[in-house]
Length: 427
Ligand code: GDP
Ligand code: IMO
Ligand code: MG
Image (cartoon, rainbow, N blue to C red):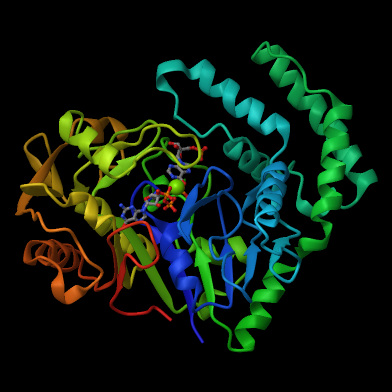
């Protein structure tokens, strides 16, 4: 029996979906604990690419239960589309395969409208959100004015809440942003229907997980976003609105802290970021374009080009202690093949001083210069065989492992399941 958490160690899109799909083989339950459909997790099964925004990335394995925990914010329209998309491909999805916490908060149309209107108003200083209403939904949760999954199941209560919320949100939309109001009937009708569609899946997820643990089952917790997008520990304000750290598994599912065994950190062999905010190792020229094209670095949710740069080990080292990472999964090593030399950032220089961690102030960070180490590259195509990796590729991996003090357990050298070297299973 093992309870394993997988988190991203950079700014998201590290390849968590692929790693979850791979490890789901050994899990009985796969659980999302935070974020919403700002996430885009790509998996490739039988040559076909699938992108999940809300459904856990273990859904293609038979006989497993996928859960959406209370810490997730759910856009019911998106979730239903994902369920229907899977059904259309012949995948049987029922309550025995997917369940949703009754406590999870619902993304409402006004959350999306406010998210987009705010970004528009901010202009050049925008965060670059996904526009999916994530921040405004978490705001309502904290303000205790959110609408939860359980509310959707009680039509009368829901309509009363909706009326109250719309009064305030429409005032904000029309008076502050000079936008059109959101009509009550349209939302009432659509969301009551969503509630009915989702009703069979709604469960007490915390209790299901507790029972599963007591029955000796393996549970895999799927992080979304990345450590440096964490609302508390990330590059604030250029972050998402949830805690992305492994520690949030407990609050985001109700699973007890004493029952978690292993934390796996997923780290891309270079760095990417989508949206605004400083990115110290960003490569703006030809090399950055090369990484973007070779790595297919376009957002799985919004299609935006991802900013690319060298691996920032200062960022990764910080993620080790923030999450208690015990095993490393390095992804997209193949993208570096063919480069003569590869740089890694090991700290920053600011006003003549050396810094080990990312500075907390974004103004300071924007003025930091990375301190690089240069390592030799390799030309040989990578194969999923540890013994036959080019010496330089192994040296690169060893360097990361030594610098962070954490052993490697997985090396990914392509988007498919079989393009992986599994050195040690976290289960
Ligand atoms: P996630 O959000 O962390 O799940 O990552 P995304 O799915 O947003 O982005 C990762 C992208 O890289 C996807 O297109 C994956 O199919 C792809 N990918 C994952 N691992 C590898 C790898 O080892 N090599 C290559 N070339 N692509 C990979
Ligand atoms: P996965 O799970 C990469 C980024 C957005 C923006 C910031 C805030 O696929 O790794 P939000 O819509 O959350 O309010 O946007 O966070 N962001 C992500 N970047 N991968 C993600 O998820 C992200 N989810 C949010 O681009 O900069
Ligand atoms: Mg992604």
